[in-house]
Length: 116
Image 1 (tube, rainbow, N blue to C red):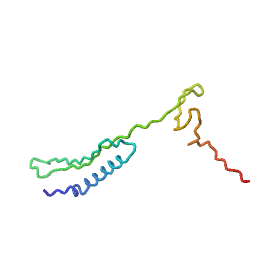
Image 2: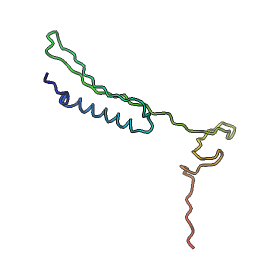
Image 3: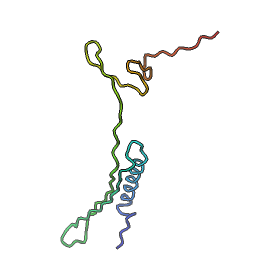
């Protein structure tokens, strides 16, 4: 036939294929996606004859992928009233409701030990 898929569109199809396979591999290795779900890479060649003689044909090449979606992430919040209005705050793992978390708090001042 004379068509080489690796050279088709000056190598663009092979490059697009490599990009989509890389997306699939990264998605498979992502712990936030299901290991059970199938992933897919599709190569499409779309042929459009230019006229009735059919000796000149445009070819549209593409590679696409379908990957697993990210799964839901569970967290917990506590809701209470503050100054007469409802307020919500995320509870960190292991944190007791009502306890203040010092993580990610810009108002915490680091104290140095006093030298003897």
